[in-house]
Amino acid sequence: MADEEEKQDKKQEQPHKEREQNQKSQSKHEQKNVQKQQKAVSIIRLGGADIDGDLSIERSLAEIKGVGINLSHSLAYVIENKLGIAKSTKLGALGEEQIESVESVIKDPIKYGIPVYLLNRRKDMESGKDMHLIGNDLTFSVRQDVNRDVALRVWRGYRHQHGQKVRGQRTKSTGRTGATVGVMKKSAKQQMAAAAQEKGKPASSQSGTPAAKK
Image (cartoon, rainbow, N blue to C red; front, side):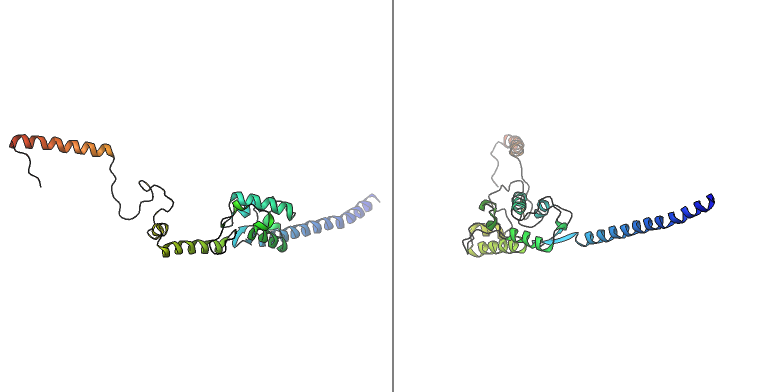
């Protein structure tokens, strides 16, 4: 009787073990599917740049051309308070609508209360407006500004045209372009002049007449 009861208990335990194994295998498959989905959104297109989805919103904003550390901090603060998205949230965890709303904040920061002094194009020459440019728009506008200075033949355009520094930096030691020219220190010049004078004295005393000018 005892043997039969043990056999029945074993038979009852076998389906429980099979169920546990099936549940474990299902959970593994689900984890793999989640990992695949995470890999699929590991790179996010935001502001014309491909950004790692594992970065936080505040860190990922600084990866965009035209957005610095200070502006990314301010934008993350606005996104957290006005859009309800925490700045520590990973970029890959956002949906398409959330990404679009974040991109709208980046493209028009004045509308969301970002101060004017953080913008990179204040009082635009053509429109007179304060705006902020990112990505390809920024590179195109900078190229247009340089070409305009060159066409007007202003000094800044002349420096740009010849590849020289524009903002009044020193060019004695750095930023030297073209053929290399040796730079001699004042002390070395004095030593060479003294050596030349010493060589010239005996020759003039022996001849008794001053050295003829070449």
